[in-house]
Image 1 (tube, helix red, strand yellow):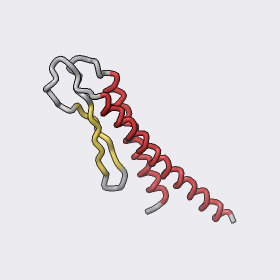
Image 2 (spheres, one colour):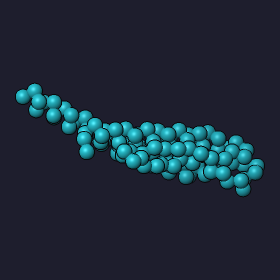
Image 3 (cartoon, helix red, strand yellow):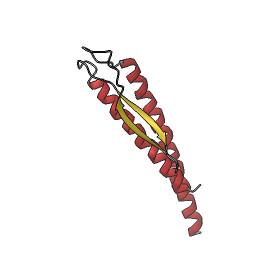
Image 4 (tube, one colour):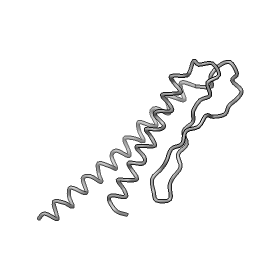
Length: 108
């Protein structure tokens, strides 16, 4: 696997975490909105490597006059997004460092 492929995979992970963070923020913002259906983010791995995120309402019809947002779950999702983004950013930075090493070897 090439360095650029590794960096591309980590980039897709950061983009997926950004999507999860946006849906979490939307859920928190609408927690008190009557009949709001919580958005759920699902990750899918791609054949070339990496991950994609898709967002859809949960489809839970049991809450007619209130939202189905659990703020504790949303905070957990926020923490998971932070950890996932940091891990992918670390992989990206490692790939960038490897590129620098390769370029310095090529110049010598």
